[in-house]
Amino acid sequence: MLTVLRDLNGLFITNPVNIRYLTGFVGAATEERESYLLITSHKAYLFTNGLYLEQAKNLELLNCYIVKLLKTKNPLEIVEISRENPISKELAELTKKLGIKKLGFESADLTVAECQKLKQTLKGVALIPTKNRIEKLRMIKREDEVDNIRQAAKVTDACFDFILPRLTPGVEEGEIAWEIETFLSRPGLDRVATAGHTVTMAFSPIVAFGKNTSQPHYLTRPGLKEDQGRALRLNDVVLLDFGARVNGYCADMTRAVFIGEPKQEWIRAYDTVMEAQKSAFEYLASCSRPGLGAQADRIAAYVLRKAGFTPYPHGLGHGIGLDVHENPRLNMKKNEQLLPGMVFSVEPGVYIPGNYGIRIEDLVLLKQSGIEILSKTTKKMIII
Image (cartoon, rainbow, N blue to C red):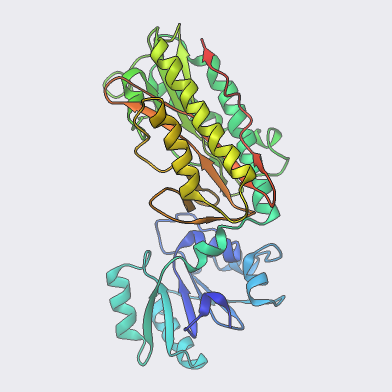
């Protein structure tokens, strides 16, 4: 019995990121239902419409998890859906044909309306809510996944080098955010990553100047002027949080930069954040496997508290992959295990409301022994 099918005859996948992970299928708009996946003990069925039928039939499954999961070379059957033959009808016919009586669904993704529709259509089938069954598989990265994240981190490093000389007094937050977006979407970036990789932006960049840096997830509006973006001034703190996406896999990095001579309090905060991250790295590198994300969070928070700073109002880090924020969570409120093959951020910070904020974020690959820090941009204090 497959682990993802425990207590079930089938699992109905609607999360487009999970479908991509399992099959390699990528639609044009993840906010729309362009595909569905049914997993049984011996075969998987990918449902899609005529717009993507040819793409689905030409999927290269060699490196897709569905091959490993079902342990067969031909694990996937394509089923066409349409307005006349919607997913509810096709799924009803297939579950009846396969004798499925207990069908799991992704409770965090399927809407109430969709669930009610399935209950009306799937006669004699018990719909069982499930949570994180595929997400748990995604936590341990394959070698090709790690390579994509490593390449994304490399492009992110290059973007930081591109942005740094553009941080001059008078430039606005939105302009720098626009420059980041432009860099991460321009042709030729496959020369920064390995040739042939598809490079895009992982998420909307956070660019904050001055007192705006005290908001951990400050909303920057790329390209908009003074009504939405503060101009950079001498003696400002700058917070940059952005990442590239390579072949669907994300990077995420944060750096703080100082424009002009920083205040002594800022220097002390920066050094303390650095020490907090270093302490977390030391734990992650030396702890027995599995480690605990909660313990790494406690260690970093203790360093800040000992120095007189209020610890960050977020976890120490998060997993990363096809989504920017994945499991595991390095959070003292969540006792998640850290295992070799996981890739996650380590991002302690200090935020003084209405004054300033400093965060340093890097991506870490947890190995059988030790760690690899994937972000290579310097963490030495940068003063422009």
